[in-house]
Image 1 (cartoon, rainbow, N blue to C red):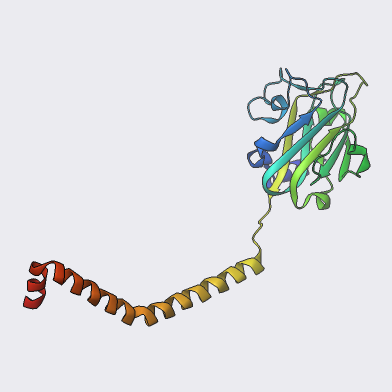
Image 2: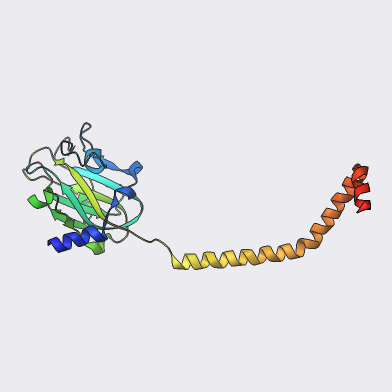
Length: 220
């Protein structure tokens, strides 16, 4: 990727971290002492001494839902030269995936990370495959050296949010508002006589109970 294209990405794309639904984030086979937070959360991922590490073997399965629909343009996955991720498969909008069924679905995109990628060069994705993303699953299949532990130092998701305004729904809502307003106006017009009658009745009752008020009204 040229320097020009890299700068263009920086201008037009944003870090999607603020749109992550943290309550739904999951990472399977992560080390309890070196969890996903080290690689994904702001502040942690900038600390090069912290890593996300796999536990039982080299594989990691990361699920990241978003609080609104996004377009994913590129991803940055940093890691050490030998234990950093190698084959990374990305799945858009695939729920409830596990190691037992991750290979049953074709990935939206697959990346084989190079040394430059592990140092922070973005992986440009098949943009057409990531236009309306509600969640992203990242399957790290292996690492650079084939060791039992995979380490990820930093994950950055770059893209934009999607304007989810539905024009048809908006027009329907506007029509409903207009209809409701007209009905309210008609009800008010028809009920004006009823309202006056009610007020007269209330005043009559009050005058019966309160001679002073009756005297004041008679004076007016």
